[in-house]
Length: 216
Length: 99
Image (tube, rainbow over all chains, first blue to last red; front, side, top):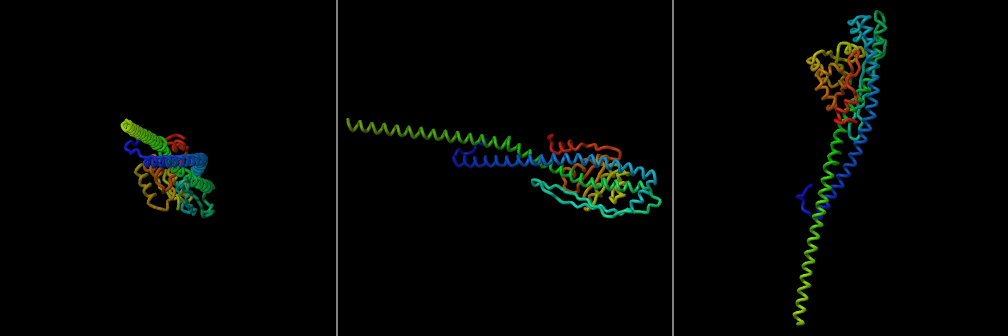
């Protein structure tokens, strides 16, 4: 409560304006918070789904790679990497939710098989390539979701802080100051009212005294 | 832009056969170096890092994950494992309250 404020009507009006502005801000931020949280929850659900798919795709891919390594030897599998000319390229774009920039990842692959002579290589290596490619496609989407979630969370955190500050500190404080000012102003009014009454009384009495003196 | 992978031998080999460059890291020193190399090239839009390696340089990774806008970081489980970090707990950590 700000007791240093002079109890005048203009200050009270200003304060009431500030209070309604804080309430408006609170409403808006509260809405923002609920929109962000609902967005966040959808993203989390999606991300959990993708995480499971990535996990499975990676496990498959790793298993196949292990088999290929068993079959052909690590060195030859590694040599294949040089022969394969798949180019994965990602394009990053942004979408905005309530002023928060969320990344959008699109993965595109260029280059098609066959990448190397089937002679002397195992079919498992082809399979491993396909599976890793599949995992990589999911990875882009998962990166997008995870980073979006992180950014949204930090924005939610900030918004919650602001909402709480308004709700628990700023608004009650202003309300109390308004009450204080109102009571001070009313008190002043009563005082001056009584003062005026007293002056009026005295004037009337003097008037009567004068009359009595004149008559007498 | 493209991916960059930091992890153990098998993960890096696996991703290299689909044209993703990467670096193997076993110690925290190597991980730090690999991370720096990954950041140096601005073409690396998404950094894939295995959880085991990320644990070695957890602070750096978390810094980029939570507060930097670029590059995007995605953690994957090490071969033969499941995800260690639950997404919900990650979100709770980021917000500071549970939802």
